[in-house]
Amino acid sequence: MEVMGPPPQDFIMKGNRKGKYFDEHFKPKVVPNSRGKVRVPGSTSLDEVFKGADSKFIDLVKHCLVYDPRLRYTPDEALAHEWVLEGLPKHIQTHHLKLVENAGDRNTSKNGSHNENPEGYYIAQPKNSARKNKNGGGVYTEASKDVHA
Image 1 (cartoon, rainbow, N blue to C red):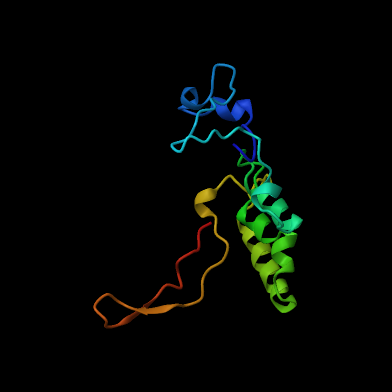
Image 2 (cartoon, one colour):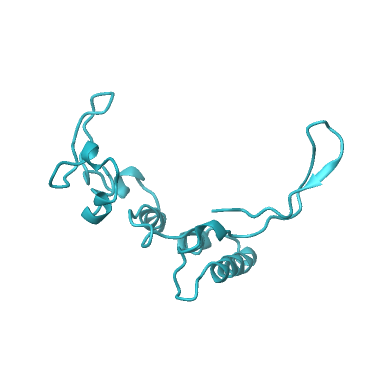
């Protein structure tokens, strides 16, 4: 909350322990932490936290920290962010965007919402990775496991 400010009232209302952290007017209870420091909601900006960081990186973090999960970046949206793409070599950008696009297609429901089926959400299937088992003998692969976000 120090960086992003207090959450919206409707978001607070959904919490089971809202009385512990918010007063009856849904204002945060500001108390010192274990070291005696008082952290005031909305008192620090992401620019201050990431001094000198690229503004596109700060934009990515800001979108990942949105309280409402319906409005927050999905992993696919974050992976397709301009800051991430700029850091990739050109020959990898095309492949990366295809993976992100394909994952988005698999996880978009008929009505266009991408957050309705989090259990089925995955970015990409890993390549075969062979490892020895605990006893040192034999090899098994993990090609069938999905990488969950």
